[in-house]
Length: 491
Image (tube, rainbow, N blue to C red; front, side):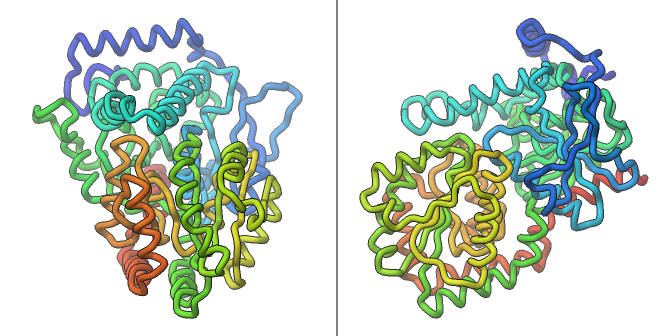
């Protein structure tokens, strides 16, 4: 197997940086073990949460030798969606890929590399996930930490080619989870680690779905086909822009990088016109404007959401606004909001840990009236993430940080980012007209809320832009990723 840490797309890594990469791998191996030669038996079980709607089955490692799977690998139509839980974003992109695969007649397999506690792979990912989540939360509480540590690391630290060298070395240890998976089944990695591990494990057809709009070496998995959501990011990745300061690097080969458009679920893309028409009709007839506040996997930014809710409380009481608040799997966030905001509990309906109730509410909200505040919390990660997807269709405005949700076909109000790389999601969305500029403080966030409420054209323009964007394929990225992966197999 080629040493992918020494030379990256024809660009040689310095001896100093290569030595650091080797030391990083040795540190993880010493702490978590090196199980590359271990044969972990695998089985397939239906996913009880998104399996019925998206046709998804889970790939699981066998812990009990008596455990049996529900089915065998479909070697003709099977496609693996490799992911990790690091925040909610990579899970959500995986759901988009699974939805598109299902719609196109393929069989999606969910493969979460962060869900096998007995493996070195999961131990490494979990340790880094814990650090990232902690950093996200601290960055929201400390301006000094955010300015000196968090923003530079997310913006420039992850951008460096030397960072990818270390990641590639660490991914060598992660490859064991693929040992008992048929090598000819295509893999779409919605985080770079599942893609890198798949390449190191000898999987033959690997797509690396890059999530961000800011080119970073963090996302490189040489040996896979890289997909990109925007033309701006395509150019940056093609020339590995800024990944070794101002030095000119050898570009990525043309067949290693493909622009696809945004990664979006089939059910959202398919219903764009009808959902936008419903938004315009609600605005025209004076129905309460619906805002969906979604709190991501790091559980940060509660203060911004609290300010928005406080501002909207009079409009909620008067019937001019309605709120959906999805706190994901962070029930404590809702508890803190109700404690801080006077009267919030009295106007709220809690949809807690009852998936059938959440699905029923989302379905009825498409054509029915909604008033007051509706809070959603689900202990299970699939339900916590997918609740936002269900609620998106019937909301008027999605309020979110500019992360993976920047690329979704719903009018968006962007609050302050977590990490410098995220700001480019808001820039792209504002340029194609389906979202606002990033509001970097609470006052500007409230100003945007006012515009949505009081200006008749603000929401209408975004809805029209979303319909236009659909007509030129901007939201077709998930379908194209699946087609690329299956096409690699059929060459």
